[in-house]
Length: 394
Ligand code: LMR
Image 1 (tube, rainbow, N blue to C red):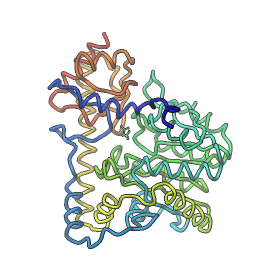
Image 2: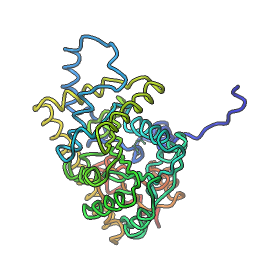
Image 3: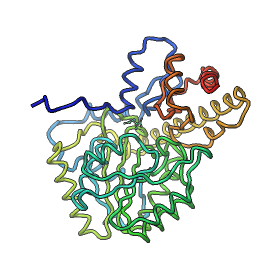
Image 4: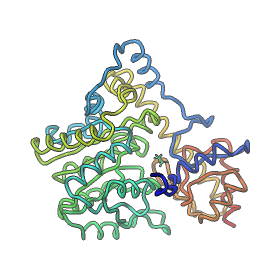
């Protein structure tokens, strides 16, 4: 059996994490995988999460099955958080899935059932797992123009022209906020135009929402999603609680569909539940239950929102500090974009060779396209980091 197989590539983000962990140099810096880190370099458990976990330990009386569609309180509170009262709730349906990736997986299976082998348009560049996931699901990934390497911003005219040329059989995958890897995001006016384009062409919107609250804030980051939900008859969305609740390893996510009317939403729900039962039967509950408890307790919710906002503001400070330091050390404004980008990432603009050199010579780890995780910047060594970046560029 196994002789027919060849070694499969490991996803580059996790491959880099393995290399970083194996590196014994004491001064090593991890700017690779997208996890939030505090000033001492730890990825903390949020205090609201610890308090919710205590309640689970005290109150939970069984570990029996929850059900195929998962923790309903979790799914409903996340749906409320994302959409608030902006659309008719009866059109929304949701299932719990293992993390953002699991949610996208369920959605991709659903798309392949509805439109086998469908073309799904992904931003160029995008999260490196989008394309392989789409291929694994039997779909056809293609790229639409997104990031301009020269201006370090969205090449919106080209993006919109590509969207305008699509049709009802196309699906468009959009990063709902905090674009990964570029850090360059759509303005509200641009979201309006994207939503109008999708409504006009009938292309199907698929949103990836993995960083809600870490860009401009909880409300502002939901602008694009809400606009599309209000403008287009149908859409799907994969939500991750990994970053904004710090629940990475607990795998808590929600796959959400919005249909034109309730009977269709019910059919979509049954199909998503069918995918889940046939794939992994149901999602792990612990992380979802933590989020459900937080979202339904005003004190814990306030504690979570306060901590999330602190994290967001800290990322902004790290952006400003790195941009300032690079401005001084390079004697140029070529890195000022770091300050205006939003979310956990920016693309520095280094070549793959320069990324390799900075890893070998300085023990600084970033993804080969020079994506850095801003939250991984060591607060007290920003100048050393900036100096290393400038040195490798010379
Ligand atoms: C990342 O982009 O680094 C994160 O979303 C982690 C992951 O699963 O790739």
